[in-house]
Length: 166
Image (tube, rainbow, N blue to C red; front, side, top):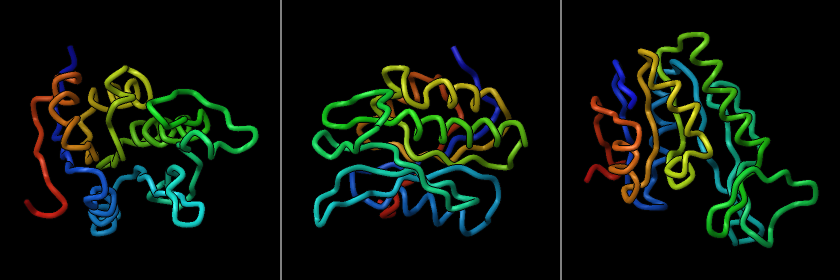
């Protein structure tokens, strides 16, 4: 059972509702702390996956690809439905969280928590460590997952925001 002495702000909504854009906007308005967001990658008009982008540096690393669009040399750490998640992308995200904890950042921005974390994979352990600090967290979480994520991590202090203002 995890307990936290901080506030977790969840940006929640359905797929394509502007959650990641809202997370970036919140970071840009203060430029405090650090974290990452996901950006969709396309082949023509077709979405083929996502890259993780560090907020403070703009550095991007491949994160997920759909089956059929996985590049040569891809080092898969996890799978979920049609998505393959790269070890490189997950290590990059975990490293950003670890560095923010070590520097005692004012806020950490995490995009996103979902089905992988519900299986105790992906960013599960890094997020659990982050919850043991007194650092505020802004995290994206799909509306279909947010109650389960709150329960899984035993988060008691949180606020929910929808990017569309609903």
